[in-house]
Image (tube, rainbow, N blue to C red; front, top):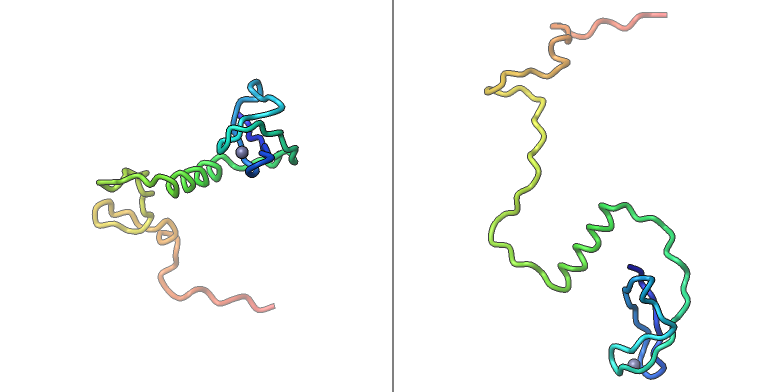
Length: 109
Ligand SMILES: [Zn+2]
């Protein structure tokens, strides 16, 4: 699917998302059904990261037709904390190697 721009001589410029195989030199105007000619534009060759593309598409879809949510959507499990836990008893990794007293004096040159 690709986005093509057409200009209706009586109305305005509009975009159409159609397969490349379905592209014709003219396209019917969505407002007046008049024959509209294609407008040549710069190709969109910049690659958008997939996650960003999906986020923008979701934001656009939400702006047009927001979904009603009745419960909190399930998300990814949160990463386990590396802090000490009364359940796991795991101490921070560096605590085992930390000296008990104040840090040693810096060497004098
Ligand atoms: Zn038109």
